[in-house]
Length: 389
Image (cartoon, rainbow, N blue to C red):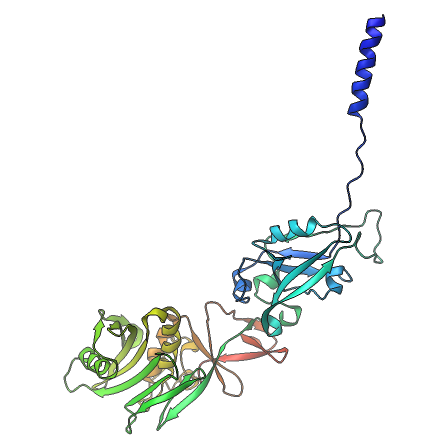
């Protein structure tokens, strides 16, 4: 019996160890932040972002984040200097904080007009603010990741004040003209040459090698491609040209390279015994961004010519406002190539012109109906398709 009692005592001791009571875990802190996954549109609107970041989907009213000035639609690039690669990572970092802790958020919000990051310190409290909607077990939301992202993120609208129309940041264009020829170009471009009979018009950037040239030449039986190659040699030096490629509306395209380290393309159209050519020349090293921009400048050039009907398949962002009314020019026919350049023309009510990317910028219903909207002075202004020059 003594042996049995000894065995029972040992088991009782072992059971006592098994029933050891652990202390309650330290409560996690509350910040009021909710995160959503970044979209491509949102990432494109934070050009200084070096990581993938996380989108702030919501900020609970009267929470520490709300009192610190954090707003929905901002992008969190880093937490305490740690670059974020996903909303899930942001949630985990925030959820690990306790009451009394602080974090420093690196935020972007390009809708405010400032693309530079700002640092915001957010503290953590023990519980959410008490509201009139009381319950036995109030929610303790620390961080939340949404899949799919909310409508704001999906529509590339970064704040509640622009939900009625997506905001774009188009490239402003200014008018350049001489004689009866004119063109649209970014700031710091100038007219480099003009023929008295308006058969040639040449504009270029004031610094760097970016040239847009229009020429109209009588063929007199000559091959149009050879006439254009002679013009390239006269203006920029001997060129090595690629094979020609037919384009819509009777336009032909070929790319070329120059021995001086430059490259570009030529669009030309033969009509009435003349060849009309739009020539683009840019540094070969910068061709990825310089060729589309310079190409848009070249295709904006208008010189006197015959009025042509508008084909229904001409996109409204590729042509002039007069072409949309049925009075097109050869430049409008060549302007169909704007779609290949991923650019398009729009203008505002004052006739000011801009370049947009129709593949990236969203066409949706806004306060003034369907269209492209950009933010101007805290409000959304609708931009109409087409160029006005």
